[in-house]
Amino acid sequence: MTQRIGTAATLRRVASLATVVLAATVLSAGCATATRDEAGSAPAPSPSADPKAALLAAVPDDEDPAFRFSTAEGGEKFNGVVDPAARGVELSVSQKNKDPKFTMAMTFRIIDEALWVRVKLTGIPGLHDRLKLPKRWMTMDRAKLSDASEVPAYEGADPANMAAIIQTAGTVEDRGNGTYGGFVDLTANADVRDNFSSVDVDALGEAAKKVPFTAVVGPDGNLTSLTLEIPAAGKQKAMKLVARYYDFGKAPRISAPTGADVQKAPASAYEMLNG
Image (tube, rainbow, N blue to C red):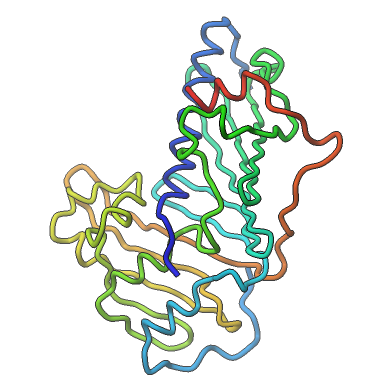
């Protein structure tokens, strides 16, 4: 059930790069800145004879309906929707720039290899027009991207890579009421190590091999959250990394933008993503 690691880290890299590119464009153009789930009523899952296998079985797969997800890594957050039946995913992230002061919200929509991007800029009046970036969905040609591997793609029904992380646990404890716990090894392989952009795994030393985690499986049998308790190390403060999957069967299906809501991406969009 594991997949290629990187959705979260890749999205953050792309959004950060795009924000830097836009900020430089704004400055060079001399633009002035503006001054202005509830728990279900069904019974909790019964304790399992093999807690690790039970927990891995609860991770979403291609048979699951559309659902929402979110992750929080330190101060960085992103969210989205996964639709396994459509091989589709929508990923959203927001970045703030201090000088000049503006906020960029970027959303990627992917169905198989098809890619659309929508950008919303706030904080500076008329910024979309000045940067020649439309407010509608933009159809992107991956062949025109300097490094298409850096752009998010549909990688399966586990965008936060929970299965890959759980796999590194030597043992998993069933604590009852759908709650599981144990320790995971962030040094187990390069893929897991590279999944966290705000964690210095090397600085954690031996502690990186035994990071406490708590996972919760909902009454419907779906994994709803995974929390890692990252200890303090050097200049790095202790933090919680939290991934959530929710609204199974309630989230909107992923479909291609149509009509007046979509256009071909202009050159400015490729300049933004290519840096």
